[in-house]
Amino acid sequence: MHSTESPHSHDPSKRLTNDRECLLAITDSLHASGQILGLLNASISNPRTSIADIAEILRRDVMLSARIIRIANSAFFFRTSQACKTIEDALNRVGMREIARLVSTATMQGMAPTNLRAYGISGEQFNKSALFQAAASQFIAHEVKMDQNVAYLSGLMRPLGILVLNKWAEQQIPNVDQLSWNDSTSLLSWEHHHFGVNHIEVSSFITRKWGFPAAISDCIEKSTDQLACVNEAPLSLILQTAESLAQTNRATFHAKQNDSILHRDRLSALGIKSIQLQEITRGALNQARNSLH
Image 1: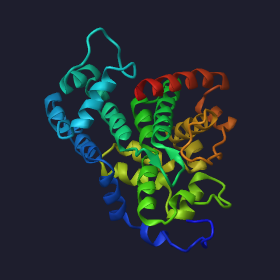
Image 2: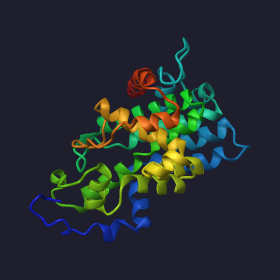
Image 3: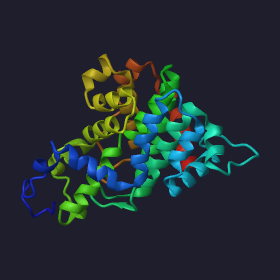
Image 4: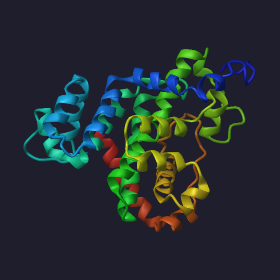
């Protein structure tokens, strides 16, 4: 919205708040590999699925396959003297348990545009933040003895809705580069003001449609509920903590975002000490950097 327009001049809530079909259509238009990720999740849930079956699905997207091979050869997963040359090599290297993580990482990197005009950041900045938060979530989960793979995937897919909302805004809102922050107190309130929905709601919905485990969609959805995080959703609390660490390291999803505060009581609820965060941050920065190259 241009700063001279009234706050409700384009009334986006009528088009996005309850328009699930629109959200799905926009998500599918972002990148072909997004649809492949849905097929992949369905295949992984079948115990009869082999690596050859998964490789066949991934070959439908040449760019995605090439990106997967590159990531499998990076320090993000493993570094050995023998490089992966085929998609089968890459999948065999990471193993069945890690395949969803590998493909999701490659997919997210491919979906980000050069610039997210509505949010005032570059695609590189988006990927940096998404990968950092995913890695930080993984390392925090390790410290508190929770499922690291679920934590990583939850942290990675949590910002998916930002790509969807940005795409919609670029198509529907004039002067999208000038969307005002106004009196918004958080990124979520800014999104709701302009789009009628926030990216967490979109991410939770899309990950369900793509067949991600319910644990991932649920913890994304609950990650904005402070009470639920502390009392019943420790994985969601991990996502909140990872977001706070990202902001501290200037890996945010909006040029003006400055709303995520690291609450000591949440660290206590997780069983994490402040001194551990330094090592977690270093590890997350290194892992995000390795996966971007």
